[in-house]
Length: 294
Ligand code: PMP
Image (cartoon, rainbow, N blue to C red; front, top):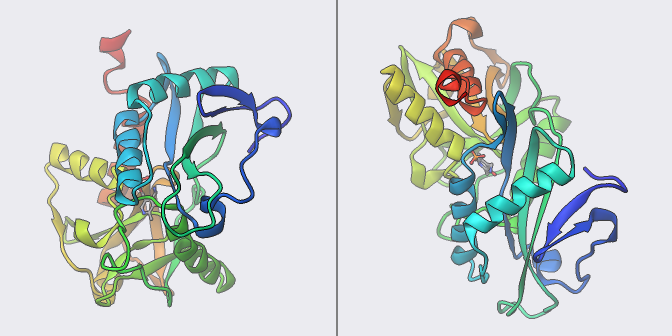
């Protein structure tokens, strides 16, 4: 993620990653009381472009608000600083990680001070390029009644780590987590879509993390005239589907080959998911309107 020459942005300054530090008595380190984001920048024909930067920084502020963590930064300024950071690190394309964390406080009440760091590094698609073998997880998504699950809060990711570890230890690539009602909600850090009879289905927004890529998929479908239905997905719905795929900033759009050993019959290249994958690539690389912009 970094070496001797890497810069990060920390509390208003660009500093060497190897020289920056955080408080070992920090509330975020001990209790997972922090909020973060994951963005991607792409090297397009007309320079580096961060995909949906406004949406991601807006969600960062909302995540902080959801857990009463002070957010005192200007979103537009943070976007500008992120572009500077990419240039300083000679990154044309990158994964970008802003993190808001609180300072020293061993009490469980919110600390007064909050810090913000932004790091960036070159990162290929998180789950690789190959179709995925996934399993249903014994780990459930946290209930929205116990936690603001719409917020991207550090501590929540223990749930994702446990589900991912379980899947990898069982020989799978990724886990599908059930919600508190026994429906399949999403993967550890991606949203799930299934295709059945030329319609896409995905879990209702109140049951899942509100993925920006999930919304992008829905927008692409609207443009292509493909129906997307939000509904509770049973395990049987997912196993009986014609095809399925995951969406997320880090993983982008990636097809699923099999769930719990049940292989999808349809050839991925002929699925709606594959069309969306191609369209998404063009969108992030801003290829569609290349003629207009140059
Ligand atoms: N679910 C979870 C739990 C996530 O952490 C992420 C990634 N932030 C996603 C889904 C996908 O969200 P996005 O498309 O905004 O990256």
